[in-house]
Amino acid sequence: MKIVIGADHAGYRLKDEIVPFLESLGHTVKDVGCSCDQSVDYPDYALPVCDQVVSGEAERGILICGTGIGMSIAANKVNGIRCALVHDLFSAKATREHNDTNVLAMGERVIGPGVAQEIIRVWLDTPFSGGERHLGRINKVMKLEAGV
Image 1 (cartoon, one colour):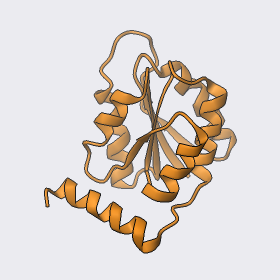
Image 2 (spheres, helix red, strand yellow; image 1 turned 90 degrees about the vertical axis):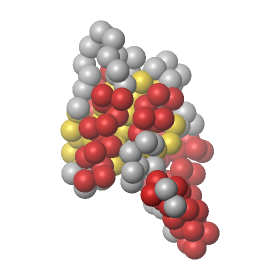
Image 3 (cartoon, one colour; image 1 turned 180 degrees about the horizontal axis):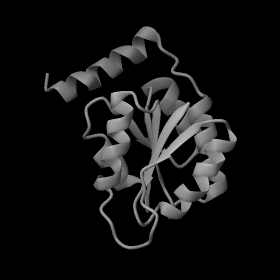
Image 4 (cartoon, helix red, strand yellow; image 1 turned 120 degrees about the horizontal axis):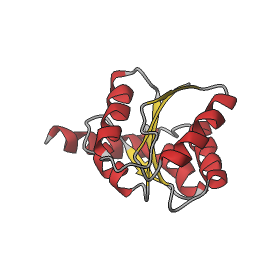
């Protein structure tokens, strides 16, 4: 799977640990930065990740900041993105099964690398359950994007 990943200054350390983990699982990873602890703006990294997911350049995206909150807010402003902020395994599975999320947000200051890796593994391995009930809800969300 092609995965694009981005982080701000508060999440780059976790990102730098996740990239080789993803590659060890056989995924192709594009890292859009950042790679320093100098203050940067999280939307500047959320947007290229989301753009690549929406365009089809990447199948999924991962965003990391201090809490994951800012990244998830920014990502969900992009039409076609369904981003979930996840810090536990149950939510990682549920957000794929029920919401068909295509971007995952996490917070480096909230979870460590071991938990992050397990969340990612579950999130990548869990298929969307489909079904009329979940598709109907996703379609309603998509209509919100369109202003309908």
